[in-house]
Image 1: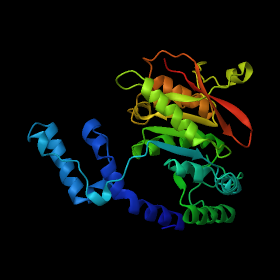
Image 2 (image 1 turned 180 degrees about the horizontal axis):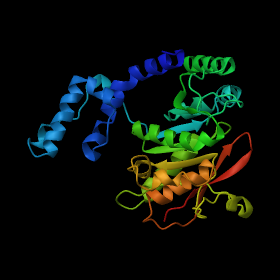
Image 3 (image 1 turned 30 degrees about the horizontal axis):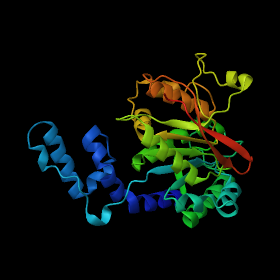
Image 4 (image 1 turned 90 degrees about the vertical axis):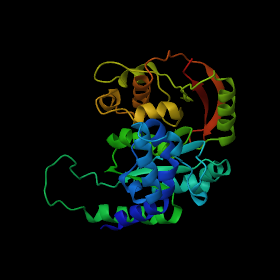
Length: 322
């Protein structure tokens, strides 16, 4: 077992039971597949068995209780912030944490966050070659050890099992949506690692959105809409299509929309939507369009948020759903 694997398993074991209980309501309501490790919990295994029997009509559904032990009752976060970050961008993450205090600002508003990181690879590494017995380079091992130490120190890295390259950015973005959904967050926010937002502005916007939205679920996809004709054309997929999307530094999706994206069956559109643009923000627009094809798209400026300290931009927070 590698050192990195040990860290991942140690981190996972401490949160696994709470994770299983937190996601049990989705399992009962939507038949959402829980990790097989959840079956190691005898109490939860019994509830899952009763749930299956209730669905089959063999027992009274009222016998199924989803209430977890008191010590495991953890509040689902309203907002989760996922931050794709390159494995080698340790200095940038330190600036985000220490100089800009972005994490402190999020924590002050009860917004958990994670940097989404793949495993480091050298530029010289051929990722498509079929080479049995290939071993990681000394440089890659050293970089992995640096990531391990960073994870142990700050506990804000979430590792995904894929090589950390620009082409993996789409998969990392999908992973952060999936991770935020697994936490039960009502909203998942994607940020760049050189972006720092004002959380109170985001909370104010979401409060206003929830107060005004019509009765019943309404998907939310909001962010900074940055249109440039020539750049926009480059984002078209192989089919020549492009969909409205928000620029990568900052955007937010609601849970009901994310559910459609991350839980689609393998033959549905999200799988094939990856053959679009290499830019994750444009790709997210494609995912949203496939996940919510019944919605009419529009555009309206709703509020201004001063978000990106490093770029010193004023970002417009848009809601493109009418």
